[in-house]
Image (cartoon, rainbow, N blue to C red; front, side, top):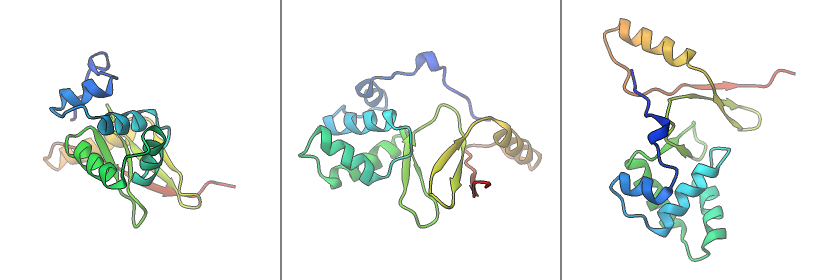
Length: 144
């Protein structure tokens, strides 16, 4: 089962987070982490780019793509891909969670709780494996 970091030990300073991951704390990297940490949704690269341009109008889309890939590779952010929709991103969560996609609006909703994760871990354990990572995507339509 995955272990959870102690939330008291987690930094909220983007520059420190980058340095702890072994990365240089450039302005672009700090901006992207700040944007993602402040997001209440799961932005696309274009969304991050638009917000980054508000902070620094000299930033290019290519820089944002390179930065997002670097942060993902370092494990600081998580890329969420759903069918043929543009990838969306979130800060790597302290605890794995799942998502519900509203098929009518495209809204991406985080599913709280541990029930799905615990059920999956039991099933995988019964098959003789350990869960390394997990992510369930549910698609639904709001009841009328």
